[in-house]
Image (cartoon, rainbow, N blue to C red; front, side, top):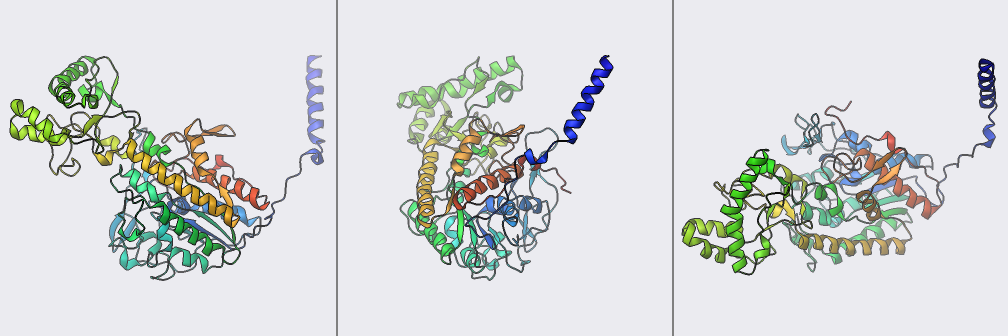
Length: 523
């Protein structure tokens, strides 16, 4: 009887499945362009538009650029051909006259969380100029004003820094600009996502550059400087005015707070453990902490307290599992002379002067300090003449970065520097949104998206994407640029903005189809 019931149930289910009326399923909305015209699409931007990932530009990464994904989705709505200036290989990197000027991409070896470069030598030569017209005008390293600069693609200027090696590979002529090459194609639709590099290089260098707010002359800027917001406003307006002069529609994006990128959020301010301090044994670690307090932190604390700056240094706890890094804070009053005088009776004039120089602006890190990703391998290692900030390799006992020797300016973005980045970003975003409204363009809020990734993540299907380094899925191994899946997410939020503005019905891509990491060898 039970067998009969099971058999009848199976027949019933089979009958229902075979007689399912497809007309009851919701009809798929056809893809239409709405009021947008995707016939000729050009994309302007920086490394994000190019598809840069894992600290390099390479063919597979270019395939997954959000700009390339958008062009593919535009096809169903009348979009035309979209050419990309492809690199020669999947290892990345660049040659100039046979010399390596950009290294290969990063990948993980085994279970280590420290990425390494793919072995091999780059094969993409800057001087081997590409012919043809390219819809993807994303140029890694480009700042806003670079898109207007004549000669930015002149290979003769690459070695001196006057031109960009990536643009030099495919610019239409040595004296052209990125904008000129875009306008020459008579685009019917464009995307513009630019401005990140106007603050990024300052931040990733630990604030080594200068905030150029108030300086209207970009030709005087250093490579790590923050662009004056007034300069950005003028440049951005000129870019969009040129792109829309013949009636093209388009989509523009604001800028996220880059300090929420994994590059700035992965390494904690207090990663110093008993393992780093004393080799991993609790007894050894405790003894080492006691020695550090007696020989370095205690004397520093006592001297700084006498000068009204005792809050810069505290004794290391013998019970805490983690301890804050020792860093240099160039925003502090330099107490080198005072420390030299205080230490002279016990250390002698020469050694005291050295200690004064090293610790004159030293303090322990706080939660508001952003230790950059590339600092991680330096922690606990001996400073060298090249990275000590003094031009010499400090002797023992000042031979452990972040523990007995302060991490330098390039290692940490301190709060005053982070505030400069935020202030400039806010100013740029005011301009971007105002120009989008003035020109009646689609507007993408990437700042909100990164905020969401950094505070709980974004869920899709059975996955959750976040900004966590390596494991979050949204960003590549350089901690700045998106992974392939991250670029897919960017494409989808661009599509949302385009659909909302122009009444188009472009479809999302399935993010689960995009990888979060590439292996050493890409087939």
